[in-house]
Image (cartoon, rainbow, N blue to C red; front, side):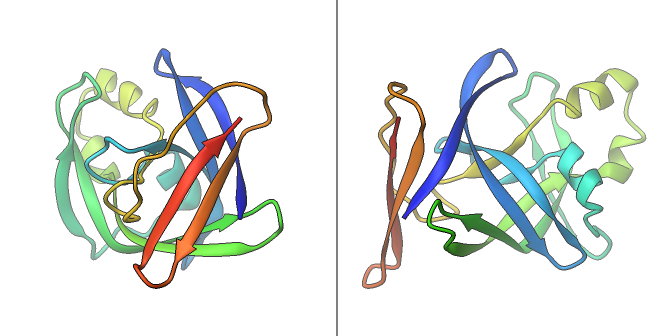
Length: 164
């Protein structure tokens, strides 16, 4: 299967993005996410959480989100989040994984500078751990770009590579 990718600049560096759909109950909508093999977890951005109106009542407190230059940002953990990924052939694959999102209620009590910077953090998909994916090879030449995914039923792994 082939999935389209975008190369975009965010936080002063170029990143590989994939377009996903939230299929979380009561929170359907599009999410543009960074594919990140180095992120310790999948993070739903504050902007996406607010736009999708993610219900966070009853979710457990997650580990603080760090690494964005503003200390630690409080988070909530959703144990089972459902994404849909549509291929160029119009096949839809559903991905279910735990995610962290910004604890919006706690963020309201933080200073304005932290709130402003938190709104700049994009959604990040941790491809290595959450999806049990092996690292991919990225060559930023010859657009358009695609994400090739091979589903291995025998090993329950998703193997993929990028093509530009």
